[in-house]
Amino acid sequence: MIRFAARRLGFMLLILVVSSVVVFVVGRLAPGDPVQLLMGDLRDPATEARLRKDLGLDLPLWAQYLHFAGRALRGDLGQSYANPGRSINRMIADAVPPTARLALATVTLAILLGIPLGVYSAVARASTGDFLARLVALGGMSLPSFVVAVLLIRWLALGWHVAPVSGWGEARHFLLPVLVLLVQPLAYITRVTRAGVLRVLPEDYVRTARSKGLSPWRVLSRHVLPNAAISVLTIVGLAFSYALTGAFVVETIFRIPGLGQAAIGALFSRDYPMVQAVGLLYAAVFIAINFLVDLGYAVLDPRIRYR
Amino acid sequence: MQPLAPVLAPTVRPRRAQWFRALERDRTTVLAGILVALIVPDSLILPAVLPYRYNQQSLDHTFEGPSRQHWLGTDQYGRDLLTRLAQGGRISLVVGVVTVLAEVLLGGLLGGIAGYAGGTLDEWLMRLTDMMLAFPALLLALLLAAILGPGALTVIVALTLAGWPAMARTVRGEVLSLKEREFVVAARAQGAGAARILLRHLLRNTVHLIVVRATLDIGPIILTEATLSFLGLGVQRPMPSWGVLIADSFQYLQSAPALAIVPCIALSVTILALNFVGEGAAEAMDPGVAKAS
Image 1 (cartoon, chains in turn green, brown):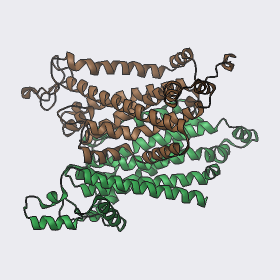
Image 2 (cartoon, one colour):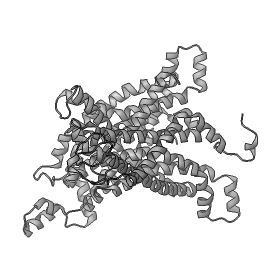
Image 3 (spheres, chains in turn orange, green):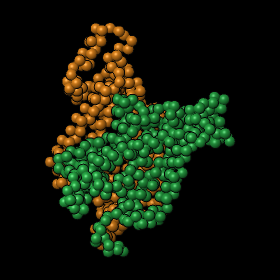
Image 4 (tube, chains in turn yellow, red):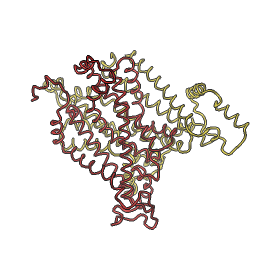
């Protein structure tokens, strides 16, 4: 187990390095000269040279990368181009809580609703309830989140005034964004849980458990669900990815000051250090999620450890 | 009961006739197929047939309701909504098809090479797919948009980069099992080179999987394209894609909701239909998948 974890950890670090190179390259290839961006209309060769030196732009590329990576490792993400004088660290620190809160709420709800729905749908296969659950699943995967947002705003906010159209800071601002973010993870969790349970149901050990006279609930909880858990685990990791990428759209629509809005805003205002920072942070989070999911596999299924 | 013939020609996939029979039983898929068959030609033909251009403004006729001249009404600049809807569909479909083709080429070829070559090359290519699969398409698109600038090309490149690993893995898995089969050994014994074996014998026999995978992918690809265009990272104005149409009419949701809701319906119905067709094709091709989903 420890060897498996160590190997995955090594791979994870490798991907992290690759992602940091990609993110660095993005910053270098992006159009526009950072010094020009920082100086604005100011024309002063001395200041320009000093800035260039401060930013390390006079060094060769590989040295610039090491500089960039070293600073990132020490937790210093640099200065914003668009908001002179503000550190990226500060901006990221401000933007993380809304996104994290929304993602946590969304994933928790998606698990609490999706797993029971999927199990029910599999056990009651071909019933009306199953049909409805599958409709939720396939419908949820086919509806773009911004379409859901448009419909919810039109009816819940503008029509029935259940929730405000946009904004952040109060509990009532939570409802619509979470509902919008929920659609895709809920659909995927329901679908994968259903598939996982359906795959396990015809197994011999399930039949044996049934014929021993165990109650349906016990068969389900002791024999079916643990074996179906492995396929659900992947999707919980994916659900987090959906909630975090969903933030780009949802935070833009509902004007939530989180990472998603910050990244999109930074892209349009050419604030590349901010784009890089969000890219790096997201990459790190996705890699960590994948790592945890892999570890979870190994815990649930010993065969994977020895592959 | 299965006939005894498979002893001579062991084949995993159902015969073509069986495939059609399975499709026939699956009413939802057929219905979705008919929908797709209605939407696609509309988007291709309507912009040419309708008397308006997608960017033709008429400031005396803004926010009009449906009428004989404008079947779906007009938008904030008096542009014909039906024309823009069809043009938007055309763009979404073109971006979707181009992306899927790029994904098939890249994923199919790399997956085939990985599976056929095996060894270190295979291992590294699979590591690469592992790596790519960790990154959501939207994040890739965001970073790419920083380099290339927003636009349809950015969308196509980002979605291809995000999509090829899954395709490569599908193809690799199949090639891995096919390459030990007699017909490959026979081809090699006749002196066929690696490229010929890969292209003529191995990849040709994975076409059914590639087609199913591509059908499954096109719905999500169009969805992501719409999302990126909605955010302003994809197709650029004045070119309408469905995502752009929805983004532009968003602010009139109170006064002219139809402007946003009509493209929302068009987009959702198209993706839903494409997804149903994809699932149906996958199930018909491999009934084992049908049990699992």
